[in-house]
Image 1 (tube, helix red, strand yellow):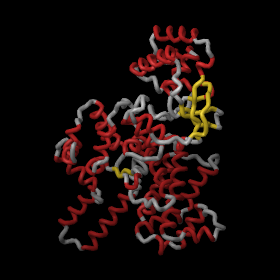
Image 2 (cartoon, helix red, strand yellow):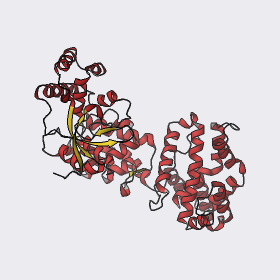
Image 3 (cartoon, helix red, strand yellow):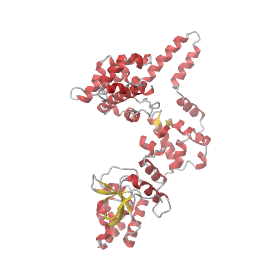
Amino acid sequence: MESLQVKEIVKLSIDKISINPENPRHDAVLNLGESFVMKQLLKTKKDMQAMYKLICDIYSEGWFPQSIVTVTYDSKTGKYVAWDGNRRLTDLKILQNPEITSYFNFTYTQIRNIFRMHKEINDKGFYEVSCYIADSFEDCANYIRTIHTTDTGALPWSDLAKKRFEYKLGKKNMFSQLKAYCSKPFENISDNFPVNKFEKIVSSRVGKEFLQIDNTDNILTTTGPIKELERKLTKIVNDIENRKIRSKDIKNSENIRKYLYNENVEDVIEEKNKRTDVIPKQISLLEDNRKLDSESKERIEEKQNEFRFKMIRKDNQIMFKNINCEKLKYNNERAKGIRDLCYEIQHLSFNSLYKSFPIAYCFLIRSLLEQTSIYFLINKGKWNKLKSANNGKDLRLERIIKEISKNKTNLILDDTISRVWETCFNNEGMKNYLDLVIHHPYKIKANVDSIKTITDMGIFAIIQYFINS
């Protein structure tokens, strides 16, 4: 067993120990009171029966001396947080305060028996437990994982619990990343959900192509619409939950492909088109161009460039839904922040939430413009010099725009984007509008029409260019 870096072993009253809202046995939750956290362990009838049996066992047999709980101290709350033994501690807290049974779904008979057991416990020491006090979660993590994943007598973690624990440790896996990024398909999965089967599908080459996702360097990115990803994941999750997928059905890539595309040739062709760098509409344009034998090569190129500019601009109905982080370079310190900003903007765009939160949307657009501009200047090797001339401090967005405008010929090598830049930043109205919304919201009202106007000027194209360059 992995060794535990123990600060000390002491007897603690259960009043001084909090049930952990990040217990791997359930999804991490906000600490909305201890009863709420405890309820995460008592969601189903099966959970209630198992917990009631454990309550009866603890009452009749007592707390075994070897049942030592591992805790860390939380200076914010002044309490210790349990990293294992949360079920046993929950039972003790229920026995100590049986009134909280009304918050759970125990039967009438079970509640009556819990009140009876409570009255018969006269020893205050019954509610004290031996605890390892570790300095931090990281110090006890290997030990906690070992006792819950090997034959030690503790109730083993499910595969789902193991994935949650890995994610807490920073060990990224496809299941946890997809669940964090696109939570809706995973809302009602059972604790016995066969995660390994799910990961075999989505981590395969054909699975990634089908879902239009990538996890290079364990960083999840998506190149397709969020709603489409949601729809596909929902089907996979439901099929696994309903046991429509057997292990032999996904034993190799060919089987996975047959399942994902349902052996529908038209679907396969459509997905292959989506995976190419050329947008289907662009393919159509190129095919039309092949028919134009009489047209000059220059005219064809002109049409393609014209089309490319139209495609790089935002969608007329759903703003910024096509923002693409695929080409971000993560050796650039600004990349992760840009990715997170893009994901939030995508979510607001796909769900049309920008209509309800136009001020927040302006904040995100301005922040994304600023961060991608800095990212672009770092990649061009210009940022450190600009910071040095500014006493080592980051430049304000206004100054950044001036610097890029001054050196536009050398920095922006795409003629289309260069023209868009002039359109956007020769017009002070665009940046001034974003500044006013953020710094002086009492002077101006953020609304959908105004946001559409400034983004229609081409800010989306500029941001995408900065990300891709």
